[in-house]
Image 1 (cartoon, rainbow, N blue to C red):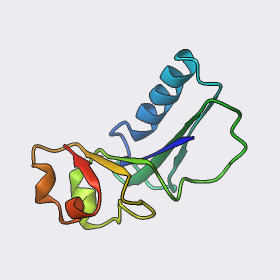
Image 2: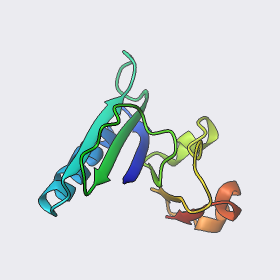
Image 3: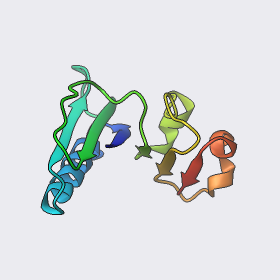
Amino acid sequence: MLEIRFHGRGGQGAVTAANLLASAALKDGHKGVQSFPFFGGERRGAPVKAFARISDGEIHLRSQIYHPDIVVVLDPHMIDSTDVTAGMDRESVVVINTTKKPGDFDFSERFRVAT
């Protein structure tokens, strides 16, 4: 099972991205897909997490993703205030929406980083 966690701010499209990824995976023939958001009652611009799971079989988990294979960071400023790498292992990938180079991030030695 592939688990993806998106970090963004309300209105940036994290929830839409997770939904689109899950829909594309379903159309690609994966039997198990999930996408769901996690946010509070805050307004537009507040931190948001969205999640997607993709599997060739049924998915019985109904929790947030705590050990993601991929993390997508839509707002690079969140890196300063949120531990976007929480729960990741050395094989995990962080994709950051930025013009910076992967080596510009402190965690680039511990994880694979793409920008």
